[in-house]
Image (cartoon, rainbow, N blue to C red; front, side, top):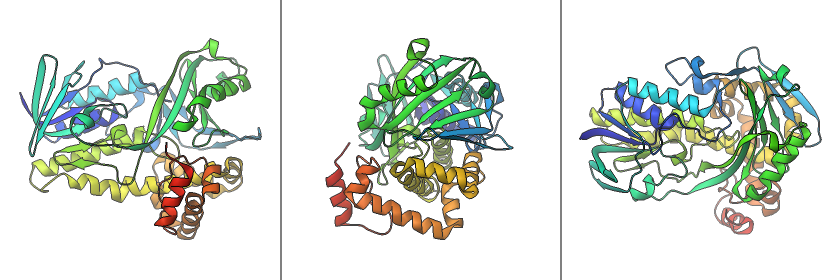
Length: 417
């Protein structure tokens, strides 16, 4: 059977792309190797800015609505920041992903589960994908099978991301957890560079996790145990302890290759500052679908409008997010002190979480502070000693102030992933 669009991967990115394409009248095939509902390791926080991207209410899968964030510094100091309006919705990925998938099939996408692609052939305007005993053909390919997917490789597309690592565990609600579980999440500063720890409330349990650069992987379990000990808990109480990878896109990472586009984790759409991947998944799925529909209906000659949209909006915002990540990792306690004592900093974080502004909009509105951030972040990436303190294992080149041989020297001095 012939399709206009073949989407491989039915997570938030693939389901969104399939739903948006189908709603525009395109014939869509959605493939996934799993059978839904299926679980996926993830903190399960959907911030309000992500929810605003969706043309429907998420309340059927929301378990808690967060209005407070508790920050815990390395020194042990903690403080709470509040919002009158919701900041984040807590869900579980097996529920959220099944919900989004159902929206895609309701829009007209045809779903085939338990399909593990074995081969893929592409021409200028054709795609043929095969598994054991089954095969399908289409014109455009959407690669949405995540950071561990094989579809990009089968399609002849080389993808390299900066890789983070995360480890999480679920725990039953304890007596101390219940008062805050309805409305507060907790963020822990860590001695592991490149990440943070979290406590996310769910309906009947809490999710506790840690993340950092891939090089910090061996430390994650020890650090998670430290956090649990500080909470008066231990891992023998929990279930679902599992690790996963967090892909952050490099500036030159592929987005469009002929008649193929990459979205979500397959494209490295994790936002560097928070490690959130769901916003980038939904945003990229929508942007890719728009470019695909414009191509099919003749308003654009190719799919490159998707790459331009990423560069202008999500890419630019994530670049500034990466700079903020550098600053926060360079001195976590001092960064948290800014969050605690400078009302403008918390207001900016709150506005980003709610989708009132993007990172790049905040940077443009505060031009002087944006230039200072450029200068300091670039300094961290240029001088190896500063890069090591910030825990940058494989630095991206500086953005504005230093380039060329300094960027290369920094990369050589600090080493690769």
